[in-house]
Length: 115
Image (tube, rainbow, N blue to C red; front, side, top):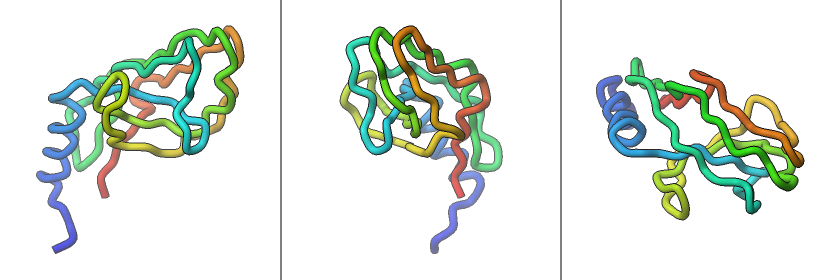
């Protein structure tokens, strides 16, 4: 068997994104941002429906005190530091974060869908 039921997709999303604290992360390609002012931010998710969920509030990263470079990918980790990368995908568009810039993922923009 190689197809998950909708029930199982929703359960996997609930068990991994709703019942545990997870954190949004920003990447420059394959590498997570590594800067003194950067930190992963907690993210909450909506109740999954049809194997899909999204962030239930804005995810607002700190104001950059130095250049973070081009943010091209977004990830979700199971820990504030270290931990396991649960999901990672290319951002809708690449955004350069320089000194005094801030990265925001608006509510419902971080969509996680199991196919």
